[in-house]
Image (cartoon, rainbow, N blue to C red; front, side, top):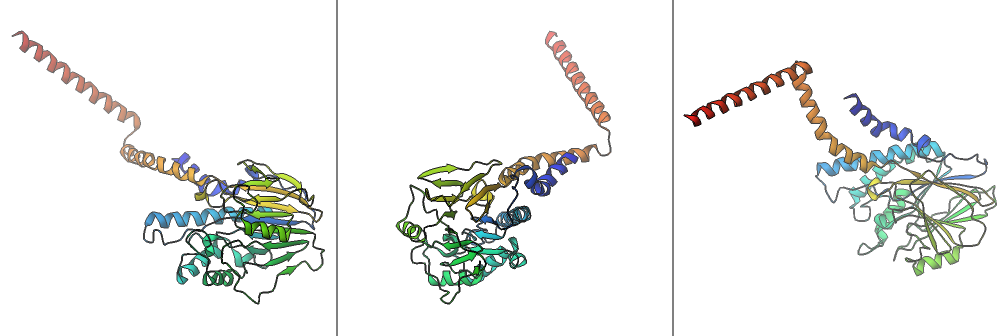
Amino acid sequence: MLLILFIFFYCEFFCYKLLSHVSWPRIPEINPKAVRMLLVSDPQLPGHMSNPTSITAAISRSDIDRYIKSTYHEALHYTQPDVIIFLGDLLDEGSVAGEHEFKSYVKRFYNVFDIKKHHEERHHIFVPGDNDIGGEGWDRATPEKIERFEYAFHAPIEDEEVFKFITFDKANIMPGAKSQLKHAQPQNRGEAYQQTVKILLSHFPLTEPDARRPQGDEIVRNFSPNLIFSGHEHQSFFLHDGNKQKFEMQKGYVNLNILDHQSEKEMVLPSCNYKMGAAGFGFAVLEQNGAMFYSILWLPPRSKVLLMYLIFIPVILVLINLDKTFRNQSFFSWLMEGAIEAKDEITKKSVFTKRAQRKFRD
């Protein structure tokens, strides 16, 4: 029973605390003028519309919220970022939700990611995804959806933001999507710096060889970014020179210079929601000369833990029932009683066999 309790507490609490020591790469010494970026893609906090009254759906929503909140807290503490970038699909049903549901989802999002607590000390950038405002398949982006997203997150969908030496721009390639915050002023936190690096932020990958879009190509051509960050695919890979290099689930990192101008460079982020597959956050440290440290902070495989619970819960229930059986009886006496019963049964069968043989002879 103690082993069962240890496994439970490890899976529910300790495994998150050990992430920075066991699973995540060691962060190198950082120049104080460098910019630390924590990248969050596709949290897709589940809504109520698909299973509004289901108990299992309610448990699943709660578990996903707790998982993301716990792992995000550890990532935030470990990386101490200057900028936190959300790369779209913040909500799973944001685009199709009614006004009341949308406000409820946004409130949950702010709670899971502690937005208000860290808003003053860290710069937040929000990029919308198709699940937030529409724009893919039959779910079209409308001015009403865009307006409520922009006001909920104080973030125009077409916006240029400056932080120290970096100019961030958001790539909006969703059909018909236009910003509704007509009087929004670009955020500028780089007055004392010369802006030398340009980073393009997009929910959809822009340079993936088999999925390029004309609108995306135009944005890349006009902005000429040194680096692109994107999500949507629920996978982690590095796009450069027409190649697609996967980041496997391992304790690794890459060092590169994004100012070499030799090729387009795009980092595609995995989802941080375990329901979408292998989950992780992105982390980058960028210096003004273009030198960048980049890694994926992989998260525990929660789906495997839940499967283990599903298998072992019946076993635990059987053990509890056995414990009740043995509570007032020693294990040795239980074995002796079983042996005596087995002996009596054998004796009865032997007597029955002898009687049968006699009857057959007579």
